Length: 509
Ligand code: TNX
Image (cartoon, rainbow, N blue to C red; front, side, top):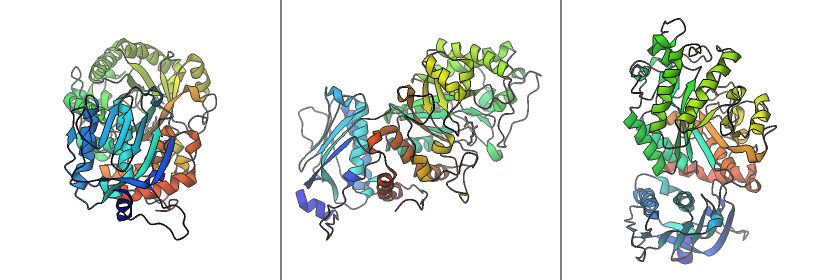
């Protein structure tokens, strides 16, 4: 399989004698360590089998599912521990790989992927697929040969929390569209999906004790389209699908602002008892739950109880942003009632950083979304023990235009070029927040201007891989020159996957 396979794959040895380009040099996010073994390599053939027993078998099945459509190869998954199979996925006690790390070794006759956990194996599978030619990402048959360069990758993440957010409230995205995005995020080792499930324009998750939230509040969206919502069964389908991609769903119910859809559904939630009309514009900051009414807290508790019961992950995001029509005093009073409810139903609170004003307890997480590198609430939050999820709007917001001419997207924090989204360090970005207090990094996708998967993909690619690398790769591995060169090699991968990405002029595609 050795040199022949590699040459057949089109590996060119430049006349200068410089080493040939290898997919081992193109991995995104950049791994902790890569050792090439030039002259060796592995080829997927009719005889290739995957060996994975016990808990590893599910990852083996996933890998086969990734590789079969483009290669057309049978790739059986052998679950018998002592059976054959030259791609071997093994769980072992190598503790230094940590909860998400992996070791991937490619030799002539065998590929060995080892990890301590199935999360680690899953991460290793994402690296494995990047060692194959770009056509591997196609969902229809392509011609091989399907070769991988010999060598070893040993890899663990810098941050355990690597998130993407999707706003399904401004425009609604159906279960299949969300699954499609989940699959794209998983390729770049994103392991948290934050779903923004309610806003002024729509309430998107069925709450059985308050059915009009979705029946009425889910019936439109920005621009006046039909909107939509997830039944509790739909939501569970998304949660389960995310779990099969080793991704945890973090539901967000935004309050006390961003609540017009709820206020429109139930007049009794309004201070004046009058339900406002549904809203299909894109202004923010005009709505608020009625902080003085008892029914507000019965409502909030019912919602938190139902959402918590449906959500296996530890976090519940309660929003708290842009509450411009709630006084500070009312805002703090509201949050002081709601935070204990999140605890009561067994969840760890997460909120946009303004809720730091309410001095949430030490296990609460503040999500920073500012456009500068500081905020008065951060220092006190860190002192209380709060962790900070870093998502600076002018760096990590995927809904911002790339430049003034980008047709899609908003521009209040941008425009944000690919290099601007990449060239910052999440561990040292915020004043008063030491790296030990950084929970991780998130790339939010607000959808005021985005209506379909194609739009999401154009905004996410290629900035999502940039944020994913900041969240995963060791600080020493970061660098625009290296990243932009590697990113260029991913263009054909996006294309093979049917992703219509933004051809940034900063990247040597
Ligand atoms: C600000 S970021 C918002 C959202 C908008 C977004 C648009 C944040 C916590 N709130 O309501 O959709 O800007 O970029």
